[in-house]
Length: 406
Image 1 (spheres, rainbow, N blue to C red):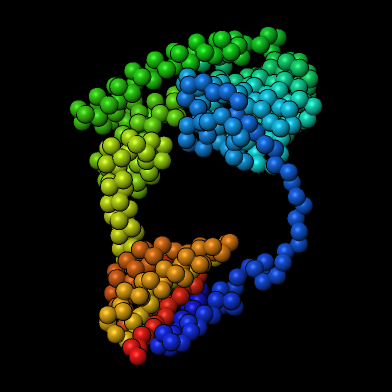
Image 2 (cartoon, rainbow, N blue to C red):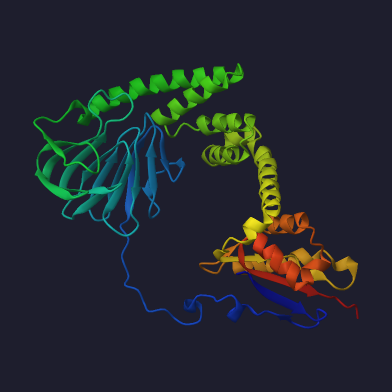
């Protein structure tokens, strides 16, 4: 059910009557001090050495302290070494992705491999539906594209022991090599560590994959220019599988999505490219394309919502959502611009409230226009509630103002 919040202003020598405190049902934590939570000291991680393509949270890496929860990615020629203030050493080989935990001795392995020397503390390596707890020295490497071994995660406990936890059980291994097919399987102990875990072999494999990536990328670009969209898509998807950090892939896949009129996919891919390579995106005029795409997609969403009004209005509102509509000017037309300004001020304040989702102002205005609710109609309760249902907003803020000249 959409609830209507009404703002009213006497001529601006008066005060806005803001009924937010009770009407929005704000979290009680805002009204009273929450019980103090135990303080957990973060594990500080320092980046001490990089080689080749290394990115931290999507941007080129720099030595020094890493932000809490950092995402570390290495390209085909990338390698990085890190150490923690607790004495652990973490090395990430080429073609890998790991995420560091904010407040614990935990590292999540998303792709590729990992070398971990824990020091005296126990560490946890997290993976989807399985994990490894270890104290000692551990090597891990996934059998990825181009690997000729049976698929799975390969590892070696070179010092100490490791507890491998999976669906339905766990295994304790000491100074052994293993192959772990998937989260539902028991790890298989190997007599000898495979060459995959040898860092020299890893570098040779990275060189081979890098050569394949360069050739496949050029083939994809050539196919795109020749209008062979299917072949181009296949080539770029292959590059993405081999080298997830290759920034040109989302650019060309975004252009291909545009050609088949998939604006939503194009917007997502081109936004990714703009984040990962801002200079290249600017040179290719991607920001201008994104502006147009955002506007087109927003208009399509709004038109669809109005066309399906009965269906949309019958859907439950999005929890914690609120829409702020432009205020209605009841006075001098010269002050009409204040209508959106007042709404923008309220949106800015509401956006700071934890757990509250403020809907985009542009989308709110487009819905009002598409539903043919004029400025005067916004002051009508039924019209305001109708617009709220179209937006699936839990609450709607409307109001009016008047400026009187002295």
